[in-house]
Amino acid sequence: MLNHSPTMDGGMASDVEREEEEAVTDLLRDRFRLSTITIAEAEAKQCGMEVSLPIITCISDLAFKFAEQLAKDLELFAQHAGRKSVNMEDVILSGEFILVDISHRNDHLASSLRSFSNDLKTKEPNLERKRKKSSRREDRVARDLLHTPDT
Amino acid sequence: MEKENTFDPDLVHEIFKLVWKRKATERGKNELSENMDNEVGASSSRRSRPTFANANALKLSSEFLRIFVAEAIQRAATIAEAEGSITIEATHLERILPQLLLDF
Image (cartoon, one colour):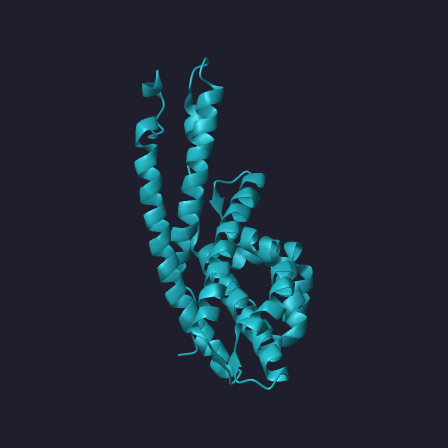
């Protein structure tokens, strides 16, 4: 009866599978930590600060959990839109409130973010119309500082 | 050269894929137990297929995660500076953590 189903989880293998999955997660977590160390140290250097390694590890684990949660959110947003694939709109939706909030307080982050989303926007111009609808506030801030003509 | 340090979109993709695969298998199992008596048709195989993401979405997610880390460091640095310290210690992180987690 199970043969009809194309899902590959055959009950007995699930323990082995889980162990394997945990090993993969650990590996990813370590790779993620390495990237975090680079980013955090660069960021701290800009502030003229040193960061102790345990702190970075802690932040990295937080960011990893955040990434996992983000994955779940994105999946739900995409599902809600009736899609199987996650696109930029979903990411923007999940980050909209925070990013707008941060933009007001933090000039460096704000400008880097604006140029980043602008980069992606020019690469995918058809998305811009929808983006405006979804994040009008963010766009308004962006327009104040960036006068790049749209392609 | 202007490119800053950021998370590798491929790495982010792999994390996402792992989460989605896990969810998809869970969904598949639920469907299976629900549909034990019924025919397990094409709908269940479709629903249990994992979500996927496009390249720009992954790049934006990487940037998003980078901002999380950068914010954590910058806020902690502000506290450390106010206390006249030159290294960011656990106590500084503790101070900013509640607000950071509320913001993200």
